Length: 183
Image (cartoon, rainbow, N blue to C red; front, side, top):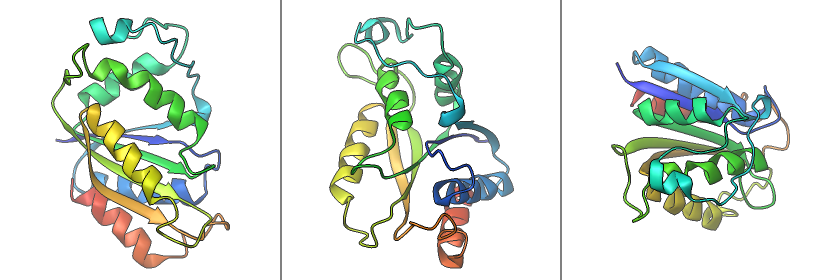
């Protein structure tokens, strides 16, 4: 049984990002996967302190937050799902807080500590132009690949200023479901 961990980086618990991440999870469940989900807006994640201990030991020294549990789920997962709306050309601050703390996934020589994991990215943006933030998405993909997280699918809702845009797009919902089922 594959293990999937999903991270929702949107303050809207029923908005476009959440809708699509839920469909990915639904597909993965139908494929028999074990699922863990974290809503980052409900989590206490402190910012990285830049101490580099995690690069030496693989463990973050900050113990007063929820990161350690999330990190363990990433290590144990076969597939990771990151979902975020686009705020100022990038993922939300909560998602970035999580990503900044992932440096324990590689060592001092930038070699990954764990087996490569498949990554599904889910983005929602108000801009109707699907190409508007591709440079940011490509940068994110390169950074996450350094952690051993390899993007196998990217799902994007455009023109998502209405929180029901994704829910009303049957083709996009099917795409998200199939991405989860294909894991």
